Length: 473
Image (cartoon, rainbow, N blue to C red; front, side, top):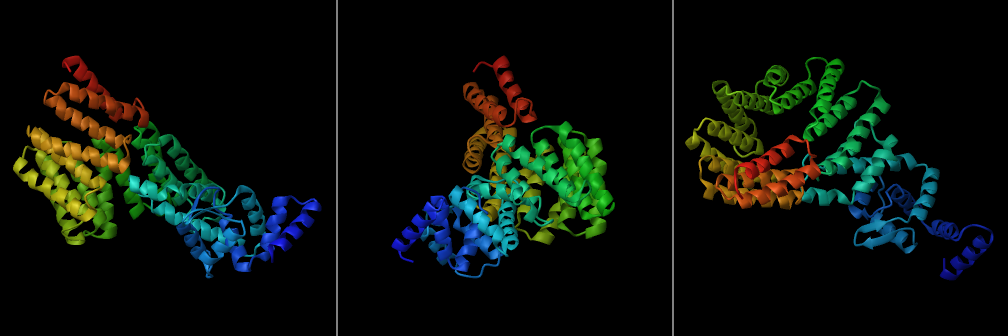
């Protein structure tokens, strides 16, 4: 159709009382091939925010659109139904979206498009790790408005297995940045959505309870977390039976929670039960069994039960090497844990090579820039500090701090920990002015991100107060 013809029809429709936008839309719609119309309807599902082309391709694939997606996208841009913001980034105008959604509801494939869209967004959610780095955050940022729409507007088209994933991804995205106020509603809505669809008793409800408990624990809200851990465990036992891998995981999670509070007598029987269950269900040689051995060893070390802990550490390390190979992140974790154990006994000559091996293994396996590498740097620094080897410790503390800033941002709670660690080193060297500045910076971050009553915030505040009270910066 020539431009003059479109203008003539637009004038005719507009004079008949139809709005100019709607009239122009109808003219353009009539000129589209069915494939372009179907793609336009799919695009109407996205939020009123920039849309990365990769998301369009993914949603089209899950919706079984097998035609030329890119070519039809160009047609929609030419017809003013889609705006190209930048290369491979698009957006739909709010009025056009409204009109396209009306067309979507008339489409026989509407439900298939909605389900495909939701499947694509679930993939995004699953790609957000529990502790996202800045790279992960940047990668996910443009998808977040669309993921939020999936969790709310299109929740009904999420499969039962996928229902809570968008909520979990959104919670992790915000929690990973220390944005706890923004993270909490998504964890809460996950629980509400699961109960609404499945009732009060369902594995997804139990998972949502556990996820919310983990979130509360990260904030030091222990009285809020404990009943949720217990409820999740009880629900899994009722639904899955007393002997099930998911029950063992909940037992382990509750034990970790108790250990973090120093409630060792509460934690021990849960660790032992989880270990026994995993052995009976999974066999003596399984990565989850190695994890349980490691966790029980950590508990015994915390209690000073070194003769009980050491064989478990060694068994966990040996099992991981047999099952996973000599070069694996879990092997590096076991090396690190055994090093910490030897350090706690003053066995420095045994500990140091394990710390170093764990650090270099993590660098080889995870690249030089990774949170686990930063942890190993910090652990080796702590080891050197405990021996009074301050000149060896300082560059490692500084490198760990810089890496966490690069990976997590300047105001992440883990950055506050690193600032506190370096301040403690300077404090022990009598460099009180340097220490005070770092304590103050750490406290500002902790109070802002964790709140004034979080255990980490309290520790930093007490360190600063002790320095001011007993030393002269």
